[in-house]
Length: 422
Image (cartoon, rainbow, N blue to C red):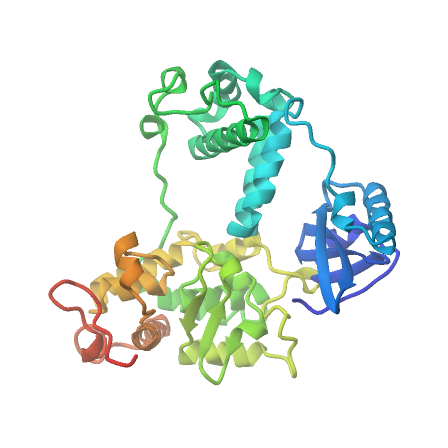
């Protein structure tokens, strides 16, 4: 948990807008938890049998503080009376009169533990912009495929990826209504395969244009890293250089905390909740990455404190890294550096495919293979990340391609051979 930062009598939305991470008390037992700039939640906290119990009360930007205070007061009274305070939170829900927007929000709350904050925010924004205006107030049982087609048609060809995400979300919300109402008599209007919608809208494969993230050739990376060193006074430039050296995603690098880094072991452990696949990821830190961290490390850093800060000591924004990248190269995107790394691995090293994919936090295995695959190849990835760091800093490979140690080279089946006991 981030370090508590308790301040009384503050406007909840101002707290969230400030981007000051942590817990902020606004009433007895009522807190605002800020997870990143612009993202905060009301949380009711109390102690039961010497354990702290936390009950979420909703997004600060969507709930009025006055109503939340009233709920918190009722919860406190329930505790005094020996009743369950959660009963005061749950509103009486009538499945037959609830709208698609109601079921949509239920689905979003359900999937929050399984997806990143960015994914949830994107889904909430898409629902607000494209689902709720025309379908939100309708009861699911009254929604027809033509209604959905009419709502999504304006973005079906221009923003097809978003439109398909909206369609899937409507389909899940409808299923949620079927379960709540115990009514399975009607087909799901948002179904696609062999369903009316597939005749009302063109196939996504016909209209979707695959657009890859812009990326520079790996031969340009040393010049970019050198340029970033020249801008080291900027936290965004430091963060971007760290991202390049570790081959991580924007959110993973921007959200890095001192508690995740073990400088002695030279490993950065990104917890599952901050990863795209919701699986913990260990990143071996090269000599250059360690030196960068030591240069920005304060005395006695807070384990929950961010390594790289934006304005107001809050988290850097994605836009901040984009600006930092374009300042040194107009031809790339932040995510494109991962593509540059992948190309370099393919053309300049002999590291096995699986090891490279693990370095990118990808899962190259089928579900069956994954069930038997128990390794993360961390020892061999140490060599891979150091070789990449050497390239980023313009150090030439002595001879031939960068190679893994013999015990880790690919065999005839292109499967990594992990040395016994590792």
